[in-house]
Length: 203
Length: 130
Image (cartoon, rainbow over all chains, first blue to last red; front, side):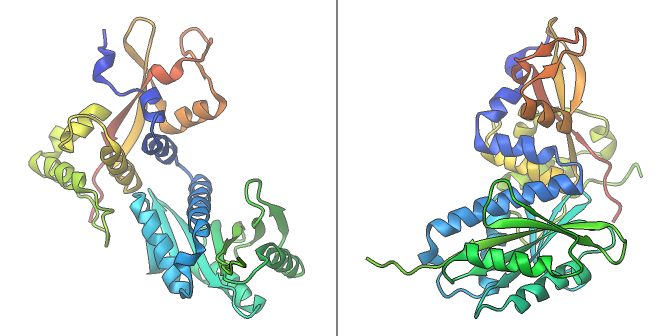
């Protein structure tokens, strides 16, 4: 007869945020599951940063990315910044044999060409033949992030390499594209998501 | 192979996990054959990390070690006779958590109290060749 008191149950795990994260993260056994996990974690970090944009004024693209990577590391997620992976990928998250890649771009002066450059860096340089999931993180200090997302989406839709665009179910400032990994011919799913840091109080 | 020791990769930042040092010392002290094919409960793991019982640090440390491929997590099911009788993968347990039920492996009945009958355990993966 097992003495239950000597063992920690799933119920006890689920009672704490770190326990819930344990249940979720230790269950990741595919690149797709890792991508979903990373997307949720990045979303959570963006929400925290957006609550106090005044703390992130005038930061460079690299400074913001470093901050995000530090936040991931603080959660004991194996995140790296600027690691060589076909080039210097902005963010790499590793879990077991799986990797998830993200390219960050700051949206300044309304340059969608800069965003496109990031998308091409991610999908044609950093993503290896077997990589099928990644993200474009768009940082903006400009107002009306939703308008920018709409325009970026329509630009991508007119871009012949994009096969499909779909909405994110939990974040209106995010969407997904499906394109082809030229190395492998396999589909690549990229999440495009915005960190809105506009801060100009009018009171 | 038998003499291959477990080593925890050292990234540029170890996320401030002091408990990792404790666990690493445990790996260093023991011969690989002594560690192989053993199961560790979460309570035992916490003690190996120098803690009296599982806390945030040990859970974070465990996640870190799973990501590094050092550990595999699985769950043992406590049956109605009070014995551990079945093994579930972490994926199966996460799926059960998502849908809110687990099927009793013996009766086929849906178990709504599965959360109190599943207990996490760890097993070391084979050390990586360096």
